[in-house]
Length: 562
Image 1: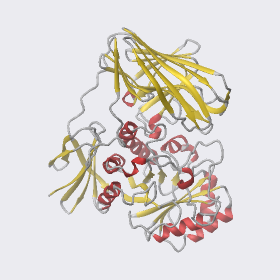
Image 2 (image 1 turned 90 degrees about the horizontal axis):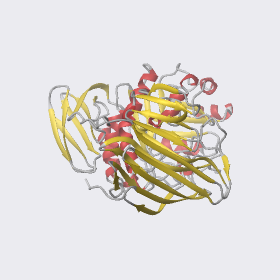
Image 3 (image 1 turned 30 degrees about the vertical axis):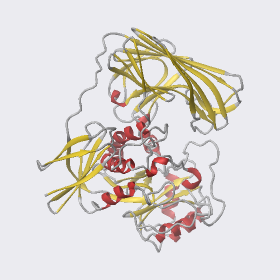
Image 4 (image 1 turned 180 degrees about the vertical axis):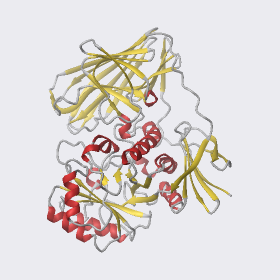
Protein backbone atom coordinates (compact mmCIF):
# COMPACT_ATOMS: atom_id res chain seq x y z
CA UNK A 1 0.00 0.00 0.00
CA UNK A 2 1.11 3.58 -0.58
CA UNK A 3 2.58 5.72 2.14
CA UNK A 4 0.66 8.65 3.57
CA UNK A 5 0.11 11.54 1.16
CA UNK A 6 -0.75 15.15 1.88
CA UNK A 7 -4.22 14.54 0.43
CA UNK A 8 -4.74 12.22 3.40
CA UNK A 9 -2.57 13.57 6.21
CA UNK A 10 -1.83 17.24 6.52
CA UNK A 11 1.81 18.22 7.07
CA UNK A 12 3.00 17.73 10.63
CA UNK A 13 1.59 20.48 12.86
CA UNK A 14 3.70 23.34 14.13
CA UNK A 15 4.61 23.07 17.81
CA UNK A 16 4.59 26.03 20.20
CA UNK A 17 5.81 25.93 23.81
CA UNK A 18 6.16 28.34 26.72
CA UNK A 19 6.43 27.96 30.52
CA UNK A 20 5.79 24.21 30.33
CA UNK A 21 2.74 24.61 28.07
CA UNK A 22 2.70 22.96 24.65
CA UNK A 23 0.28 23.46 21.75
CA UNK A 24 0.08 21.96 18.26
CA UNK A 25 -0.98 24.55 15.67
CA UNK A 26 -3.15 22.78 13.08
CA UNK A 27 -4.23 25.50 10.64
CA UNK A 28 -6.85 27.48 12.61
CA UNK A 29 -6.96 25.02 15.50
CA UNK A 30 -4.99 25.02 18.77
CA UNK A 31 -4.66 21.29 19.40
CA UNK A 32 -3.34 18.93 22.09
CA UNK A 33 -2.94 21.60 24.77
CA UNK A 34 -0.81 20.13 27.56
CA UNK A 35 1.31 21.19 30.52
CA UNK A 36 4.55 19.36 31.29
CA UNK A 37 3.39 16.57 29.01
CA UNK A 38 0.02 16.15 30.73
CA UNK A 39 -2.93 16.60 28.30
CA UNK A 40 -5.58 19.10 29.40
CA UNK A 41 -7.61 20.18 26.36
CA UNK A 42 -8.02 18.31 23.06
CA UNK A 43 -8.45 21.46 20.96
CA UNK A 44 -9.69 25.06 20.84
CA UNK A 45 -11.05 26.65 17.69
CA UNK A 46 -13.05 29.72 16.71
CA UNK A 47 -16.15 28.44 14.89
CA UNK A 48 -18.46 30.32 12.55
CA UNK A 49 -21.62 28.49 11.39
CA UNK A 50 -24.12 29.69 8.82
CA UNK A 51 -27.91 29.61 9.21
CA UNK A 52 -27.97 25.88 8.35
CA UNK A 53 -25.16 24.91 10.76
CA UNK A 54 -22.62 24.60 7.97
CA UNK A 55 -19.07 25.58 8.94
CA UNK A 56 -17.63 28.72 7.36
CA UNK A 57 -14.07 28.09 6.19
CA UNK A 58 -11.34 29.75 8.27
CA UNK A 59 -8.06 30.61 6.55
CA UNK A 60 -4.92 31.55 8.47
CA UNK A 61 -3.67 34.99 7.44
CA UNK A 62 -0.66 35.22 9.76
CA UNK A 63 0.95 33.51 12.76
CA UNK A 64 3.07 35.49 15.19
CA UNK A 65 4.91 33.60 17.94
CA UNK A 66 6.81 35.16 20.83
CA UNK A 67 8.42 33.80 23.99
CA UNK A 68 5.20 33.72 26.02
CA UNK A 69 2.52 34.55 23.46
CA UNK A 70 1.06 33.40 20.19
CA UNK A 71 -1.31 35.17 17.80
CA UNK A 72 -3.15 33.73 14.80
CA UNK A 73 -4.96 36.07 12.41
CA UNK A 74 -7.94 34.47 10.70
CA UNK A 75 -10.43 35.17 7.94
CA UNK A 76 -13.74 33.30 8.12
CA UNK A 77 -15.26 33.62 4.66
CA UNK A 78 -17.97 31.87 2.67
CA UNK A 79 -21.63 30.81 2.96
CA UNK A 80 -22.55 34.50 3.13
CA UNK A 81 -20.15 35.32 5.98
CA UNK A 82 -16.97 37.39 6.21
CA UNK A 83 -15.38 37.78 9.65
CA UNK A 84 -11.83 38.82 10.48
CA UNK A 85 -10.51 37.67 13.84
CA UNK A 86 -7.48 37.21 16.06
CA UNK A 87 -6.83 34.18 18.27
CA UNK A 88 -4.36 35.12 21.01
CA UNK A 89 -2.58 32.85 23.48
CA UNK A 90 -0.79 34.13 26.59
CA UNK A 91 1.20 31.68 28.72
CA UNK A 92 2.21 31.99 32.35
CA UNK A 93 3.74 29.29 34.58
CA UNK A 94 0.38 28.35 36.14
CA UNK A 95 -2.11 29.73 33.62
CA UNK A 96 -2.87 29.79 29.90
CA UNK A 97 -5.31 32.30 28.40
CA UNK A 98 -6.83 31.96 24.93
CA UNK A 99 -8.66 35.06 23.78
CA UNK A 100 -10.62 35.38 20.53
CA UNK A 101 -12.07 38.54 19.03
CA UNK A 102 -13.88 38.65 15.70
CA UNK A 103 -15.27 41.56 13.71
CA UNK A 104 -18.17 40.83 11.37
CA UNK A 105 -17.92 42.61 8.00
CA UNK A 106 -21.18 41.49 6.35
CA UNK A 107 -24.57 41.15 8.03
CA UNK A 108 -25.60 37.49 7.99
CA UNK A 109 -27.69 34.90 9.81
CA UNK A 110 -25.76 32.44 11.93
CA UNK A 111 -26.36 29.59 14.35
CA UNK A 112 -23.03 30.01 16.17
CA UNK A 113 -20.05 32.36 16.30
CA UNK A 114 -17.48 31.81 19.03
CA UNK A 115 -14.97 29.54 20.71
CA UNK A 116 -15.45 25.80 20.92
CA UNK A 117 -13.37 23.78 23.37
CA UNK A 118 -12.90 20.05 22.91
CA UNK A 119 -12.23 17.77 25.89
CA UNK A 120 -10.66 14.34 25.19
CA UNK A 121 -13.02 11.38 24.94
CA UNK A 122 -11.00 9.59 27.63
CA UNK A 123 -12.62 11.97 30.13
CA UNK A 124 -15.68 9.66 30.04
CA UNK A 125 -16.60 8.73 33.63
CA UNK A 126 -14.21 11.24 35.15
CA UNK A 127 -15.26 13.57 37.96
CA UNK A 128 -15.85 17.22 37.11
CA UNK A 129 -17.08 20.26 39.03
CA UNK A 130 -19.25 22.67 37.05
CA UNK A 131 -19.48 26.30 38.18
CA UNK A 132 -22.65 27.92 36.87
CA UNK A 133 -23.14 31.57 35.97
CA UNK A 134 -24.75 32.29 39.35
CA UNK A 135 -21.58 31.09 41.12
CA UNK A 136 -22.96 27.77 42.38
CA UNK A 137 -21.00 24.54 41.96
CA UNK A 138 -22.29 21.18 40.76
CA UNK A 139 -20.30 17.97 41.30
CA UNK A 140 -20.76 15.50 38.47
CA UNK A 141 -18.98 13.20 36.00
CA UNK A 142 -18.38 13.23 32.29
CA UNK A 143 -20.89 10.71 30.91
CA UNK A 144 -19.70 7.15 30.35
CA UNK A 145 -22.45 6.18 27.91
CA UNK A 146 -22.87 8.62 25.04
CA UNK A 147 -25.18 11.30 26.39
CA UNK A 148 -28.17 12.01 24.12
CA UNK A 149 -28.48 15.56 25.41
CA UNK A 150 -26.22 18.24 26.90
CA UNK A 151 -24.58 16.74 30.00
CA UNK A 152 -23.83 20.23 31.42
CA UNK A 153 -25.37 23.64 30.78
CA UNK A 154 -25.04 27.19 32.10
CA UNK A 155 -21.25 26.80 32.40
CA UNK A 156 -18.93 29.48 33.69
CA UNK A 157 -16.09 27.13 34.74
CA UNK A 158 -15.14 23.45 34.79
CA UNK A 159 -12.81 21.90 37.36
CA UNK A 160 -11.40 18.98 35.38
CA UNK A 161 -8.80 17.08 37.38
CA UNK A 162 -5.88 19.37 38.18
CA UNK A 163 -7.02 22.28 36.01
CA UNK A 164 -9.91 24.72 36.03
CA UNK A 165 -11.24 26.01 32.72
CA UNK A 166 -12.92 29.44 32.94
CA UNK A 167 -15.12 30.64 30.06
CA UNK A 168 -15.92 34.31 29.39
CA UNK A 169 -17.93 36.22 26.82
CA UNK A 170 -21.15 34.17 26.77
CA UNK A 171 -23.01 31.38 28.54
CA UNK A 172 -21.50 28.01 27.59
CA UNK A 173 -22.81 24.45 27.62
CA UNK A 174 -21.46 21.02 26.67
CA UNK A 175 -22.51 18.29 24.24
CA UNK A 176 -21.23 14.75 23.84
CA UNK A 177 -19.70 14.74 20.37
CA UNK A 178 -19.24 10.97 20.45
CA UNK A 179 -22.82 10.98 19.10
CA UNK A 180 -21.27 11.96 15.74
CA UNK A 181 -18.18 9.72 16.22
CA UNK A 182 -16.00 12.68 17.29
CA UNK A 183 -13.47 11.73 19.96
CA UNK A 184 -14.45 14.59 22.25
CA UNK A 185 -16.86 16.40 24.49
CA UNK A 186 -17.47 19.97 23.24
CA UNK A 187 -18.04 23.08 25.32
CA UNK A 188 -19.51 25.90 23.25
CA UNK A 189 -21.76 28.95 23.31
CA UNK A 190 -24.55 30.12 22.52
CA UNK A 191 -27.02 27.87 24.40
CA UNK A 192 -29.22 25.85 22.05
CA UNK A 193 -32.40 26.77 23.90
CA UNK A 194 -31.99 30.33 22.54
CA UNK A 195 -33.50 31.05 19.10
CA UNK A 196 -31.42 30.27 16.04
CA UNK A 197 -30.47 31.26 13.45
CA UNK A 198 -29.89 34.81 14.68
CA UNK A 199 -28.67 37.97 12.97
CA UNK A 200 -25.09 39.22 13.26
CA UNK A 201 -24.93 42.77 11.95
CA UNK A 202 -22.10 44.29 9.92
CA UNK A 203 -19.55 45.91 12.23
CA UNK A 204 -20.64 43.81 15.21
CA UNK A 205 -17.82 42.21 17.19
CA UNK A 206 -17.67 39.04 19.28
CA UNK A 207 -15.11 38.41 22.03
CA UNK A 208 -14.72 35.27 24.11
CA UNK A 209 -11.94 33.70 26.14
CA UNK A 210 -10.82 30.51 27.82
CA UNK A 211 -8.48 30.58 30.80
CA UNK A 212 -6.84 27.35 31.97
CA UNK A 213 -5.63 27.55 35.56
CA UNK A 214 -3.48 24.85 37.10
CA UNK A 215 -4.67 23.80 40.54
CA UNK A 216 -1.82 21.50 41.58
CA UNK A 217 0.60 18.95 40.22
CA UNK A 218 -0.78 17.45 37.03
CA UNK A 219 -1.26 13.70 37.23
CA UNK A 220 -3.17 12.99 34.04
CA UNK A 221 -0.35 11.33 32.17
CA UNK A 222 -1.28 9.22 29.18
CA UNK A 223 -1.33 5.52 30.00
CA UNK A 224 0.41 3.05 27.73
CA UNK A 225 -2.05 1.00 25.67
CA UNK A 226 -2.31 -2.73 26.14
CA UNK A 227 -0.04 -4.47 23.64
CA UNK A 228 -1.58 -6.32 20.71
CA UNK A 229 -5.16 -7.04 19.68
CA UNK A 230 -7.30 -9.87 21.01
CA UNK A 231 -10.11 -11.24 18.82
CA UNK A 232 -12.94 -13.44 20.09
CA UNK A 233 -15.84 -15.18 18.38
CA UNK A 234 -18.90 -12.93 18.17
CA UNK A 235 -21.64 -14.68 16.23
CA UNK A 236 -22.39 -14.41 12.53
CA UNK A 237 -20.24 -12.07 10.45
CA UNK A 238 -22.28 -8.97 9.47
CA UNK A 239 -23.64 -8.79 5.94
CA UNK A 240 -21.75 -6.17 3.90
CA UNK A 241 -23.65 -3.71 1.69
CA UNK A 242 -23.12 -0.62 -0.47
CA UNK A 243 -25.51 2.23 -1.29
CA UNK A 244 -26.69 2.66 -4.86
CA UNK A 245 -24.97 5.40 -6.86
CA UNK A 246 -26.84 8.72 -6.64
CA UNK A 247 -24.88 10.46 -9.42
CA UNK A 248 -26.52 11.59 -12.68
CA UNK A 249 -27.17 9.01 -15.40
CA UNK A 250 -25.78 7.00 -17.04
CA UNK A 251 -24.58 4.63 -14.30
CA UNK A 252 -23.57 1.04 -15.00
CA UNK A 253 -24.98 -1.74 -12.77
CA UNK A 254 -22.66 -2.84 -9.98
CA UNK A 255 -22.29 -6.25 -8.30
CA UNK A 256 -20.40 -4.85 -5.31
CA UNK A 257 -21.92 -5.82 -1.95
CA UNK A 258 -24.14 -8.54 -0.55
CA UNK A 259 -27.09 -6.11 -0.62
CA UNK A 260 -27.90 -2.69 -2.03
CA UNK A 261 -29.01 0.26 0.12
CA UNK A 262 -31.53 2.55 -1.57
CA UNK A 263 -33.13 5.61 -0.01
CA UNK A 264 -36.28 6.74 -1.80
CA UNK A 265 -37.36 10.30 -1.09
CA UNK A 266 -41.07 10.06 -1.80
CA UNK A 267 -41.41 13.84 -1.74
CA UNK A 268 -39.59 14.00 -5.11
CA UNK A 269 -40.49 12.73 -8.57
CA UNK A 270 -37.27 10.73 -8.98
CA UNK A 271 -37.95 7.92 -6.50
CA UNK A 272 -39.26 5.42 -9.05
CA UNK A 273 -36.22 5.89 -11.31
CA UNK A 274 -33.93 5.56 -8.29
CA UNK A 275 -35.57 2.27 -7.34
CA UNK A 276 -35.17 1.04 -10.92
CA UNK A 277 -31.45 1.83 -10.79
CA UNK A 278 -31.03 -0.03 -7.50
CA UNK A 279 -32.96 -3.06 -8.75
CA UNK A 280 -30.74 -3.22 -11.86
CA UNK A 281 -27.79 -4.21 -9.66
CA UNK A 282 -29.54 -7.54 -9.05
CA UNK A 283 -28.92 -7.65 -5.30
CA UNK A 284 -31.30 -7.83 -2.32
CA UNK A 285 -32.50 -4.36 -1.36
CA UNK A 286 -32.32 -2.49 1.96
CA UNK A 287 -35.00 0.16 1.36
CA UNK A 288 -35.46 3.41 3.28
CA UNK A 289 -38.55 5.50 2.48
CA UNK A 290 -38.67 9.23 3.25
CA UNK A 291 -42.27 10.41 3.47
CA UNK A 292 -44.10 13.65 4.17
CA UNK A 293 -47.25 11.73 5.15
CA UNK A 294 -48.75 11.27 1.68
CA UNK A 295 -50.29 7.80 2.11
CA UNK A 296 -51.05 7.34 -1.60
CA UNK A 297 -47.41 7.81 -2.61
CA UNK A 298 -46.20 5.60 0.25
CA UNK A 299 -48.59 2.82 -0.81
CA UNK A 300 -47.44 3.19 -4.42
CA UNK A 301 -43.79 2.79 -3.36
CA UNK A 302 -44.56 -0.29 -1.28
CA UNK A 303 -46.44 -1.85 -4.22
CA UNK A 304 -43.42 -1.17 -6.43
CA UNK A 305 -41.34 -3.30 -4.07
CA UNK A 306 -43.62 -6.35 -4.33
CA UNK A 307 -41.73 -7.91 -7.26
CA UNK A 308 -38.28 -7.24 -5.74
CA UNK A 309 -36.18 -9.00 -3.13
CA UNK A 310 -36.34 -6.58 -0.19
CA UNK A 311 -34.53 -7.73 2.95
CA UNK A 312 -35.75 -4.88 5.16
CA UNK A 313 -37.68 -1.63 4.92
CA UNK A 314 -37.63 1.59 6.94
CA UNK A 315 -39.92 4.60 6.66
CA UNK A 316 -39.01 7.95 8.23
CA UNK A 317 -40.72 11.30 8.54
CA UNK A 318 -39.14 13.78 6.11
CA UNK A 319 -38.85 16.45 8.80
CA UNK A 320 -37.92 14.36 11.83
CA UNK A 321 -35.72 11.84 9.93
CA UNK A 322 -36.89 9.07 12.29
CA UNK A 323 -39.47 6.29 12.21
CA UNK A 324 -41.89 7.79 14.69
CA UNK A 325 -45.12 6.03 15.63
CA UNK A 326 -47.25 7.81 13.02
CA UNK A 327 -44.86 6.98 10.16
CA UNK A 328 -44.50 3.38 11.29
CA UNK A 329 -48.29 3.06 11.40
CA UNK A 330 -48.54 4.40 7.83
CA UNK A 331 -45.96 1.90 6.63
CA UNK A 332 -47.72 -1.02 8.28
CA UNK A 333 -51.01 0.04 6.71
CA UNK A 334 -49.34 -0.19 3.29
CA UNK A 335 -48.61 -3.87 4.07
CA UNK A 336 -45.02 -4.37 2.96
CA UNK A 337 -43.83 -7.97 2.81
CA UNK A 338 -40.29 -7.18 3.99
CA UNK A 339 -39.26 -7.00 7.67
CA UNK A 340 -40.01 -3.53 9.08
CA UNK A 341 -37.17 -1.63 10.74
CA UNK A 342 -37.13 1.25 13.20
CA UNK A 343 -34.54 3.99 13.52
CA UNK A 344 -33.27 6.95 11.54
CA UNK A 345 -31.88 7.84 8.13
CA UNK A 346 -29.47 10.08 10.00
CA UNK A 347 -26.77 9.79 12.64
CA UNK A 348 -26.61 7.67 15.78
CA UNK A 349 -27.36 11.00 17.47
CA UNK A 350 -31.01 10.79 16.43
CA UNK A 351 -31.34 7.16 17.49
CA UNK A 352 -29.85 8.07 20.86
CA UNK A 353 -31.92 11.21 21.40
CA UNK A 354 -35.25 9.95 20.05
CA UNK A 355 -35.37 6.53 21.72
CA UNK A 356 -38.79 7.23 23.23
CA UNK A 357 -40.26 8.29 19.88
CA UNK A 358 -39.00 5.29 17.91
CA UNK A 359 -41.31 2.29 18.50
CA UNK A 360 -39.61 -1.01 19.33
CA UNK A 361 -42.23 -3.37 17.90
CA UNK A 362 -40.03 -3.76 14.82
CA UNK A 363 -37.61 -6.38 13.53
CA UNK A 364 -34.42 -4.35 13.83
CA UNK A 365 -32.95 -0.88 14.35
CA UNK A 366 -31.09 1.10 11.71
CA UNK A 367 -28.95 4.26 11.58
CA UNK A 368 -25.98 5.65 9.72
CA UNK A 369 -22.92 7.69 10.68
CA UNK A 370 -20.28 9.94 9.16
CA UNK A 371 -16.88 10.85 10.62
CA UNK A 372 -16.70 14.36 9.12
CA UNK A 373 -19.77 16.09 10.53
CA UNK A 374 -18.01 18.81 12.54
CA UNK A 375 -14.61 19.06 10.88
CA UNK A 376 -12.87 17.76 7.77
CA UNK A 377 -9.47 16.97 9.29
CA UNK A 378 -7.89 13.59 8.65
CA UNK A 379 -7.10 13.45 12.37
CA UNK A 380 -10.86 13.45 12.95
CA UNK A 381 -11.34 10.80 10.28
CA UNK A 382 -8.87 8.52 12.08
CA UNK A 383 -10.04 9.27 15.63
CA UNK A 384 -13.65 8.56 14.66
CA UNK A 385 -12.99 4.84 14.25
CA UNK A 386 -12.56 4.22 18.00
CA UNK A 387 -15.77 6.18 18.58
CA UNK A 388 -17.56 4.03 15.99
CA UNK A 389 -16.98 1.08 18.30
CA UNK A 390 -18.48 2.98 21.25
CA UNK A 391 -21.48 3.87 19.06
CA UNK A 392 -21.93 0.28 17.86
CA UNK A 393 -21.82 -1.14 21.38
CA UNK A 394 -24.31 1.42 22.70
CA UNK A 395 -26.65 0.92 19.73
CA UNK A 396 -26.77 -2.81 20.51
CA UNK A 397 -27.73 -2.00 24.09
CA UNK A 398 -30.44 0.37 22.85
CA UNK A 399 -31.73 -2.31 20.46
CA UNK A 400 -32.12 -4.71 23.41
CA UNK A 401 -32.09 -7.92 21.39
CA UNK A 402 -33.11 -6.54 18.00
CA UNK A 403 -30.49 -6.79 15.23
CA UNK A 404 -28.72 -3.53 14.42
CA UNK A 405 -27.98 -2.34 10.88
CA UNK A 406 -25.38 0.43 10.48
CA UNK A 407 -24.82 2.44 7.33
CA UNK A 408 -24.23 3.54 4.77
CA UNK A 409 -21.18 5.11 6.37
CA UNK A 410 -20.00 8.03 4.24
CA UNK A 411 -17.04 10.37 4.59
CA UNK A 412 -19.20 13.48 4.64
CA UNK A 413 -22.89 13.75 5.53
CA UNK A 414 -25.30 12.46 2.89
CA UNK A 415 -27.67 15.31 3.75
CA UNK A 416 -27.99 18.09 6.31
CA UNK A 417 -30.31 16.77 9.00
CA UNK A 418 -30.22 20.11 10.87
CA UNK A 419 -30.93 22.31 7.84
CA UNK A 420 -33.11 25.32 8.67
CA UNK A 421 -34.17 25.80 5.03
CA UNK A 422 -35.36 23.23 2.45
CA UNK A 423 -32.52 21.21 0.90
CA UNK A 424 -32.13 20.97 -2.89
CA UNK A 425 -33.91 18.06 -4.56
CA UNK A 426 -34.44 16.71 -8.08
CA UNK A 427 -37.30 18.26 -10.01
CA UNK A 428 -37.27 15.63 -12.76
CA UNK A 429 -38.66 12.11 -12.75
CA UNK A 430 -35.51 10.69 -14.39
CA UNK A 431 -31.96 10.57 -13.00
CA UNK A 432 -30.34 12.93 -15.50
CA UNK A 433 -29.43 15.18 -12.56
CA UNK A 434 -29.00 12.39 -10.04
CA UNK A 435 -30.89 12.14 -6.76
CA UNK A 436 -30.36 12.03 -3.00
CA UNK A 437 -26.79 12.78 -1.96
CA UNK A 438 -25.99 14.07 -5.47
CA UNK A 439 -28.01 17.13 -4.39
CA UNK A 440 -27.51 17.16 -0.62
CA UNK A 441 -24.22 15.35 0.12
CA UNK A 442 -20.60 16.43 0.29
CA UNK A 443 -17.74 15.12 -1.87
CA UNK A 444 -14.32 14.42 -0.35
CA UNK A 445 -11.07 14.00 -2.28
CA UNK A 446 -9.99 11.24 0.13
CA UNK A 447 -12.66 8.97 -1.37
CA UNK A 448 -10.01 7.72 -3.81
CA UNK A 449 -7.03 7.83 -1.43
CA UNK A 450 -5.12 4.55 -0.98
CA UNK A 451 -5.34 4.95 2.80
CA UNK A 452 -9.14 4.87 2.75
CA UNK A 453 -8.97 1.12 2.18
CA UNK A 454 -7.24 0.67 5.54
CA UNK A 455 -9.82 3.03 7.07
CA UNK A 456 -12.69 0.83 5.79
CA UNK A 457 -11.08 -2.28 7.31
CA UNK A 458 -10.62 -0.41 10.60
CA UNK A 459 -14.20 0.90 10.46
CA UNK A 460 -15.50 -2.63 9.96
CA UNK A 461 -13.37 -3.86 12.87
CA UNK A 462 -14.83 -1.12 15.08
CA UNK A 463 -18.48 -1.46 14.05
CA UNK A 464 -18.69 -5.26 13.88
CA UNK A 465 -19.69 -6.06 17.44
CA UNK A 466 -22.04 -8.89 18.46
CA UNK A 467 -25.59 -7.78 17.68
CA UNK A 468 -24.70 -5.81 14.53
CA UNK A 469 -26.28 -7.71 11.62
CA UNK A 470 -25.19 -5.59 8.66
CA UNK A 471 -22.76 -2.85 7.70
CA UNK A 472 -22.61 -0.69 4.59
CA UNK A 473 -20.30 1.99 3.22
CA UNK A 474 -20.39 4.68 0.53
CA UNK A 475 -21.98 4.35 -2.93
CA UNK A 476 -21.21 1.96 -5.76
CA UNK A 477 -19.83 4.63 -8.12
CA UNK A 478 -19.61 8.37 -8.68
CA UNK A 479 -17.84 11.00 -6.58
CA UNK A 480 -18.98 9.34 -3.34
CA UNK A 481 -18.47 5.86 -4.72
CA UNK A 482 -16.18 2.84 -4.58
CA UNK A 483 -15.75 2.05 -8.29
CA UNK A 484 -12.09 2.21 -9.26
CA UNK A 485 -10.87 3.07 -5.75
CA UNK A 486 -8.60 1.15 -3.36
CA UNK A 487 -11.46 1.16 -0.81
CA UNK A 488 -13.39 -1.17 -3.14
CA UNK A 489 -10.70 -3.81 -2.54
CA UNK A 490 -11.29 -3.52 1.20
CA UNK A 491 -15.05 -3.98 0.76
CA UNK A 492 -14.41 -7.04 -1.43
CA UNK A 493 -12.15 -8.50 1.28
CA UNK A 494 -14.92 -8.02 3.86
CA UNK A 495 -17.47 -9.56 1.51
CA UNK A 496 -15.39 -12.74 1.42
CA UNK A 497 -16.14 -13.14 5.16
CA UNK A 498 -19.92 -13.02 4.63
CA UNK A 499 -20.81 -16.58 5.70
CA UNK A 500 -18.23 -16.96 8.47
CA UNK A 501 -18.17 -16.49 12.23
CA UNK A 502 -17.15 -13.01 13.34
CA UNK A 503 -13.84 -12.55 15.16
CA UNK A 504 -13.92 -9.18 16.87
CA UNK A 505 -12.01 -7.11 19.42
CA UNK A 506 -11.09 -3.51 20.28
CA UNK A 507 -8.00 -1.63 19.20
CA UNK A 508 -5.28 -0.98 21.78
CA UNK A 509 -4.91 2.65 20.72
CA UNK A 510 -7.46 3.42 17.98
CA UNK A 511 -4.78 3.24 15.28
CA UNK A 512 -4.28 -0.48 14.64
CA UNK A 513 -7.33 -2.68 14.10
CA UNK A 514 -8.13 -6.28 13.20
CA UNK A 515 -11.24 -8.22 12.21
CA UNK A 516 -11.60 -11.86 11.26
CA UNK A 517 -13.81 -14.68 10.05
CA UNK A 518 -13.74 -18.33 11.14
CA UNK A 519 -14.87 -21.06 8.74
CA UNK A 520 -14.16 -24.80 8.79
CA UNK A 521 -11.25 -24.45 11.19
CA UNK A 522 -9.61 -21.65 9.23
CA UNK A 523 -9.27 -18.14 10.71
CA UNK A 524 -8.79 -15.35 8.17
CA UNK A 525 -7.82 -11.91 9.44
CA UNK A 526 -7.74 -8.39 8.04
CA UNK A 527 -5.39 -6.02 9.88
CA UNK A 528 -5.21 -2.23 9.30
CA UNK A 529 -2.81 0.49 10.38
CA UNK A 530 -4.13 4.08 10.49
CA UNK A 531 -0.99 5.48 12.09
CA UNK A 532 1.41 7.92 10.42
CA UNK A 533 4.20 5.38 10.92
CA UNK A 534 4.87 1.71 10.31
CA UNK A 535 3.44 -0.52 13.01
CA UNK A 536 4.01 -4.09 14.12
CA UNK A 537 1.14 -5.75 15.96
CA UNK A 538 0.36 -9.18 17.40
CA UNK A 539 -3.22 -10.40 16.92
CA UNK A 540 -4.22 -12.98 19.55
CA UNK A 541 -7.15 -15.28 18.89
CA UNK A 542 -9.44 -16.95 21.42
CA UNK A 543 -7.87 -20.28 20.33
CA UNK A 544 -4.48 -19.17 21.63
CA UNK A 545 -3.02 -18.62 18.17
CA UNK A 546 -1.01 -15.43 17.60
CA UNK A 547 -0.59 -13.75 14.22
CA UNK A 548 2.11 -11.10 13.77
CA UNK A 549 1.73 -8.31 11.22
CA UNK A 550 3.96 -5.40 10.21
CA UNK A 551 2.15 -2.72 8.24
CA UNK A 552 3.28 0.47 6.57
CA UNK A 553 1.49 3.71 7.42
CA UNK A 554 -2.04 3.64 6.02
CA UNK A 555 -1.82 0.01 4.93
CA UNK A 556 -3.86 -3.16 5.49
CA UNK A 557 -3.15 -6.84 5.03
CA UNK A 558 -4.88 -10.23 4.94
CA UNK A 559 -3.54 -13.27 6.75
CA UNK A 560 -4.84 -16.84 7.09
CA UNK A 561 -4.32 -19.15 10.08
CA UNK A 562 -5.00 -22.88 10.12
